[in-house]
Length: 120
Image (cartoon, rainbow, N blue to C red; front, side):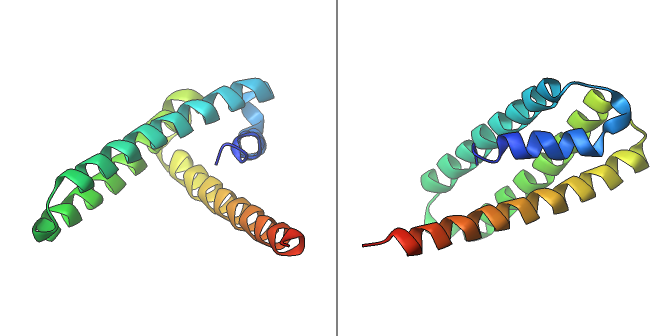
């Protein structure tokens, strides 16, 4: 995921061209967002380890809450950093999410191809 940080910052730069921010500002926001996601997911994983497996329905609720919390945080942070309307922020969020998912899939595919070609 850290390899994708500069690519995510580039996606942000292309998505918010009218903000006239430097690439470094987008990179700082990308680092901030990824750090939040890693810390939040780490806490959810610790909760999952601490809960016994018999409480599966509670874990489903924890995962639902964490997904909603992450989406809400990304929305609020994009709105605060880039100063767009609610509808524009949501549309940008969807576009950025799609572009980031595509970049992630391409990077993972490239990594698998390189690994397959260099395996001994």
